[in-house]
Length: 112
Length: 117
Image (tube, rainbow over all chains, first blue to last red; front, side, top):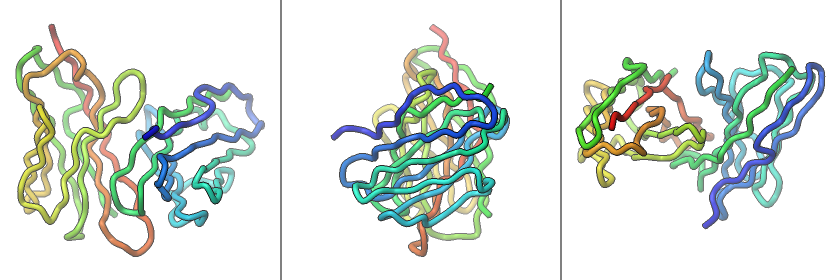
């Protein structure tokens, strides 16, 4: 089976712009989670989707949003980018809501 | 809220030797999963090993094994016969096994492991 894929792998944006990141889960996985990784804060949970419904959300501002499509692919959007949004964004998929999560390679976002 | 603590920011080991990475966690739940993930410089987070809290037997995966002490809330990772490819950041993570809603992974801050040839 193909693993979790994320596109694009690298992004450079300027403050105030918006960005959309994409994640395709492992075939058969219905749950997709997003995490932000920074040197200072470590790995922080953004949100999780299961069967197109957001089931859980971390403590991030409303500028961070996401959605999941009927084929389980997920996108996350960050509007009005800030310098502090520079991070590695990781997507993980699992079969259900509580079992093992498998991660994609991440998208490195740099905000200038 | 659950927390995961990795008290060793950095560790090193000689090639072919054994090293143990420490992890403690805090939870009031009785049913949960614990994981060790490895993140090499390529940044891909790779699952190393998983432990179900209801299982007393420690999980093993080839050269990787855990020492799970539920009462002490301790979950250490032992790497035997260390190889250069084991050099990476290792994260300990907790996930609730509650079936109500979906539960995220809670990560520790990580331990950077260096392997010396």
